[in-house]
Length: 164
Image (cartoon, rainbow, N blue to C red; front, side, top):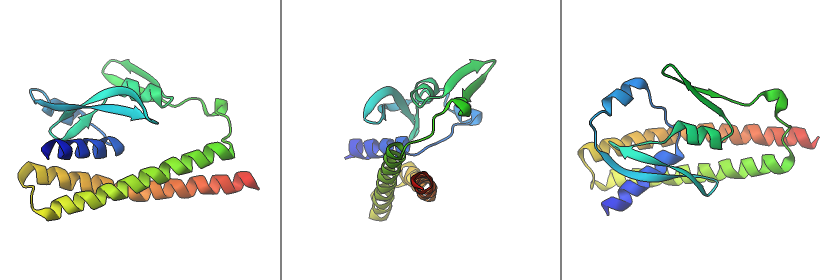
């Protein structure tokens, strides 16, 4: 059961965006790696991540390059740059519909994750650190819902504008 729980949490964490700050990284020194997780982009494995203290850490270069960002590192600073906007072609209706479908799928998964996390918290099976991690994951998931809904609305507005 614990394997499924850890797998579920890892999936939720990978689904949600999270930021790692320098203080968090220094706290990881000497910590035990609890497991690994595959990083998928549109169903294809692009790399792997490690799970430490219930948080998933994925390689920035692999994810950045897979999502079209220019990734660099100089003097202790990771640099992520998006491509030049003037070179970015306008989105077609098919692309916008695909993005809308992707965000709707993500939104559905996030809502299901929120429901499952709430059930796990209410079950009383988890205490201590496990309960804290569940609550953190719940807060992250709940913050993502309005962001995804806003992005869907923005994409739908772009689609309407394109169809005029």
